[in-house]
Image (tube, rainbow, N blue to C red):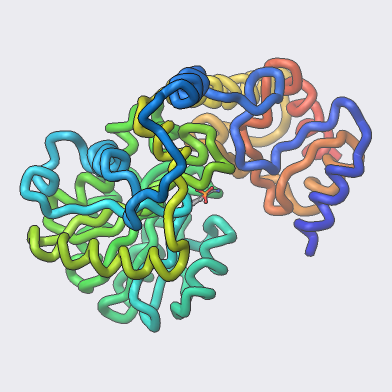
Length: 363
Ligand code: PMP
């Protein structure tokens, strides 16, 4: 409720200098949505390509796109790809509801809010595992019923912006193996954490190398900036080639029933290229600028988490009361838990944002 009110207030607020840090969409340095140059170029090519039409795609989508998606997350030289132990099925972006109903799914606490609805509506029992503290995360993994599904954010965890270290991922993988849990990766920000697609795929590739069967829900909303095109892929790694064939056929049945046929436009765009570094670098710069201004203002507290966190979001640590004041007094909008979208900051508003934070922290 509080969240809905906050959105209403944001839209009603006429202040020309209001700052919206609640959105999960990239903004350029002028605070405007950005169409990636590569997307623009591909769109032009698509317009004039005489071979394209609006026929239905296959039920599992555009094969060149799903194969490219598998390569992007698993690595072009992945053994699973060489051994044909993988498959990709196009999805309506984000996390598709595609696993066996009745199973228990563990999602992180905190997580992207929609995980509750997606898995709940799909008939799963949804439970949470504690995320912030590695010790309690391991404890939750160990005490969950064997064979549970664990939803893991592949990189750039939303909302905390804190990813496990490689050592911690190894520990997580070891417990998942011991408990026979099933790892389901949600990968909505590949390229956003480090600017490198390969680095951001480290955890997924580690699990595949360690012999796991995995599901990876890949979204292209953020890293290609094509939010409304609903472009995603469910990539699955199996143990054998035959299993991959069987799973593809099952997923086609599910796709048929849930979406009938996947949309082509976004898949054709992604098929063409990638262009992520600009976005990742601007976000990293805004993290540095925020801390620089807070240091300059001698704002009480330690703000190093802003630069150590990664991805699009940052947990400021501001309280609900401070979030309220910053909204009412400074027209700065963020979610009630103090999460800000770094993409909402730019060279023109980052100082004002720091000053607003400085005020609420001191008062
Ligand atoms: N997973 C996570 C963790 C996300 O943050 C998001 C987008 N906010 C998604 C999945 C899916 O977004 P979309 O459906 O637009 O691809």
